[in-house]
Length: 244
Ligand SMILES: C[S@@+](CC[C@H](N)C(=O)[O-])C[C@H]1O[C@@H](n2cnc3c(N)ncnc32)[C@H](O)[C@@H]1O
Image (cartoon, rainbow, N blue to C red; front, side, top):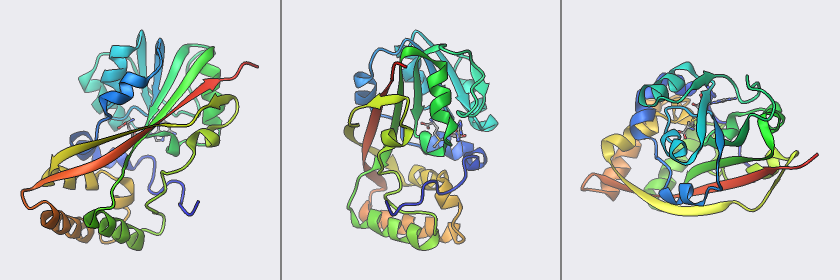
C-alpha cells in the first residue's frame, strides 16, 4: 500500500471540536441495520458521539470512551450514558466486561496493544465491530481536492483508508470480508468547509486557508446552487473473538 498510515495526529480533533460536531458525516441507517445483536457495548474513540446515540438504542448498555477530553465532553453533553477518558490501548475495565466493542472511524489511530486489550475486555463470544466512512467519488472537484492534499501534505494519500483493517487487527480475532454500504449526503457549502477544517490532514497543510479557498471555488463551480452532493461508502468489519 502506498498510503501513509496515519496522517495528522490523534489529538488534532481537540482543536476543532465545533467543526467536527457540526459537519462530520453520520453513518447510514443501513449500517445499524446490519450490526449483529450488541448486548453490553463499549464504544472506543466515540468523539462527539456521532454513532453513540444509535448504538445506545441497539445496546443493552453503553459505555463510551475517548482519548480526547474535549471530544468526549462534547459527546457527553448530548447523552446520559457513562463516558470514560482512556486510550483503546489501556482500557480501565475488567476482563470479559462487554459483549461488543465498537469503533467508528477510529481504529487507524490505535497502536498494537489495542487488539489484545479489546480481546481482554470482551466476553469469550464477544465481537469487535469497526467501521469507516470513505468518500467514493471520481468527480473532477473531488479529484482536484485530492491532488491538492497530496501535493501539500507528504503524509497524505487519497487511498490511506482503503486497507484491510481486519487483517491488521489480526489475532485473537476471526473475521469475514467487510460489508460495504453506499450512500450519499447533501450539505451546504458552509458545512462542507467546516468538514474540511475538521480533518487532521487538512490542518497539517502549510497553506491551509489557500486549500480551503481553492476547494470552495471548485465546489461552487460543480454545485452552483450551493448544495454539495457527496457519495460515500461505509465499510464495516465484524471480528469475532477466537476461543483460546
Ligand atoms: C475521527 S474521530 C472519530 C470519532 C467518532 N467515533 C465518530 O465516528 O465521529 C477519532 C477519535 O478517536 C480518538 N482517538 C484517537 N486515538 C485514540 C486512541 N488510541 N484510543 C482512543 N481514542 C482515540 C480521537 O480523540 C477522536 O475522538
